[in-house]
Image (cartoon, rainbow, N blue to C red; front, side, top):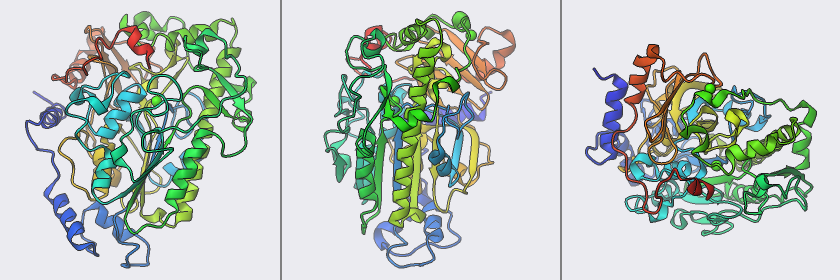
Length: 540
Ligand SMILES: [Ca+2]
Ligand SMILES: [Ca+2]
């Protein structure tokens, strides 16, 4: 007999494939949207269950004049490569992120949120197009949603808001982009999604500040054959505001504080703590090198995982970087690298604080939905690697916060397993917009209202075609393209030391988790080829 979860997942897949429209917008939502479009006037009633109505009802006591009753604004904050070491979550170490914690205290913190993909491109593509990788066929780092048939013609999340009357402004890395190399600073923007963008509609990242001399600029690991200081970490002496992320924040703050008659969707893509770990000196000073603690690590940890797990992906950064870190036969380099990551993450948190202060100055915080997420996590030596592109917890588990005035309760948290794939559907519902037919993911609005409700989602994370992880509230299950498997009991083994996939006692658990793997998987994008080839991963 299929469990409720399996049945729901089957329906979800069928819908996503266009075979049925069972999860299209509810009649209640469609009706309320008609009201908004036709009336542009007060319509909220205290009995309504529509989140927009409730948000409006909860808006300032100024009552029903024009400023207070429009649709909620959205502040959308994407952070790059931020893992669960932050003090807001219960990770293995403590990166101080007071502004992210303060944001969590204003709404709902998801303590078990998981990314749809394990590197920037597939994860951001899934979140912003609304389509799961196994429905879009965009699985790996070497993909481009803008040329993918069946994806490029669908409205991305910001574009959908723009098409529905929102003023949309953005800056920084929202879709994939990089400070060097593959796709570069322009990345994969959607020029049709925005009324304005900094640096420009076809370039996502501003110039970045690089120290005159990094710490290890000549190392093999630093360049990965590119000579770009990719894997390097050092403080930067720089005036306030000069770093790329602060340039991004300046533009976003200007937009936040510009009065508008229409509702706004304003997005900031913060690049740190993405490599290279260059951040202003004061953030390095927060973490004295002698105080840096190493994460839990066992030299024999990978003895019980499939061959594809440790070396199949991203060999140029993950394992090679770890080998280079360990070359000094002591832990100094390792601690220096961690210090660089922690400093970069606290710097990103500082930028978040700037944005939130600006929102307060705008006077519209009471009617602004805030969502903050990271595109995936990051290994800092766990599983003998630096980097992402694995299907383990450290890569898949991410910070995720939603503040929705009138919907979320300040200081609430959910320990239910959820996916960032839900962001598109959730924001659409919170804004009173109809759910687009093409998107996957469950709207989290019921959970935002009631943190204690049962939530039977099983988030799926992909890394290249045919490799999947499934998470429930307790277990992490991984299956690779060759059929090899891993299973971890996260309640008793949070470091994923012991692979239980061959334990006969786990057969019931395995059957349940295997059933969540999608049977129909879209073919990978043409040109992606064998996404497991090392040369493909190296292009990340
Ligand atoms: Ca990333
Ligand atoms: Ca192990």
